[in-house]
Image 1 (cartoon, rainbow, N blue to C red):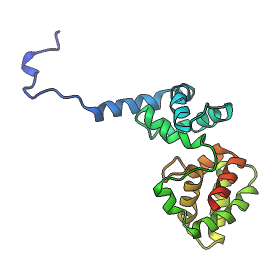
Image 2 (image 1 turned 30 degrees about the horizontal axis):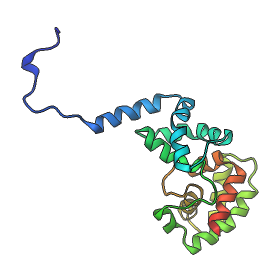
Image 3 (image 1 turned 90 degrees about the horizontal axis):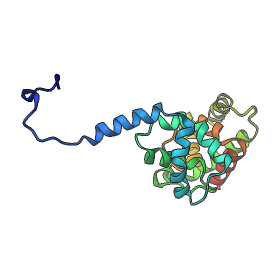
Image 4 (image 1 turned 180 degrees about the vertical axis):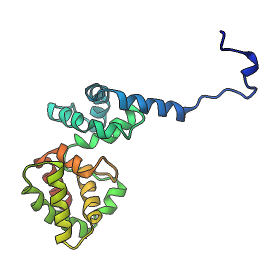
Length: 183
């Protein structure tokens, strides 16, 4: 009461600021524990992919959650951006990703699949080194390899770091998705 003064009340009509609400919501998403967020988005993801999440799917979501939640402002956005982790193969790329998967890119992905199959140990660092070496040997820029790789692994053109995505998906799923995209 002591802080309120009628002279401080403006004349303009009050309005609800959805952008501010989403900014606050995003802040609290980033502060939430990864396991709690997996529990909160699991029903949404199950609805998106049309099946129940198994233990492997929940593990993937938890491992990727730190990177995923940094980009999301709502649980809906978080679920939509995480669904690629548990979608069944072969992935159906969206329109933008489909444009990246040109015949040349598919051929390059076919060659890259063999390189990825031999990566050991499977980690972000070894994957990045292998893809960079492949791009150099193939006479391509890293983006010419990484963007089609992102489309192959996620079905979209946006995701957390592609090497982090590959590490979370694991060897078999990553190589399988790359081979699927290569055709």
